[in-house]
Length: 225
Image 1: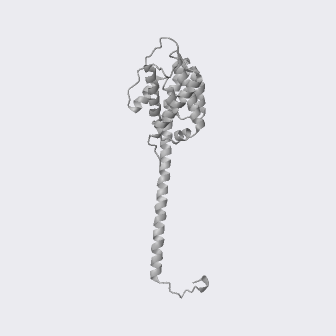
Image 2: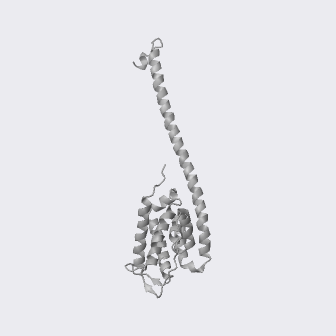
Image 3: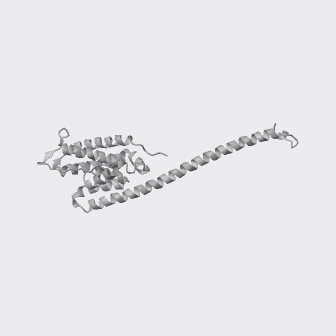
């Protein structure tokens, strides 16, 4: 039937109308169901973002306390430039905490408190200046480096669900910035033990350690909505 053939006298039938109403009702219910689901998902995103913002702010203050101690301590002057470079690049606070924990035992203690682990005891004193030999690392130094990797993985859990953290680690350029900070901190750590290390070897070791950390992080359950 075309529109021209329409006549108000034609009986479309109550049965047909009831069927159409039922179909329309089902379609409306399905649309409402989808709308509710989308609304719930959007609300969850908002709540997660607010939660991440609160966590990020909390740990930014946490980091700020340690940074103040580092800034006023002349001992750490060689690390200020790479630290500022990382912060200017938007590096999340927990990532900076990873790296600095090697040379700041109080930081390591704080991370280990969160992870429920015992504090590190490191009182190694080198008897004479030496060159770093990755094939012959003194056991206390090796243990300290391994503990550093542990702290880096544990620190990533502080706010690993943070969107800013995940997005930052997706960029190779940002990972290079982290590795650069690691190199400065690692060389600084060894220098304080009267151990020198060649720049190329330091770079290779920190790149290896960074990817070890990334490998462990991939095993973690990342919160997704």
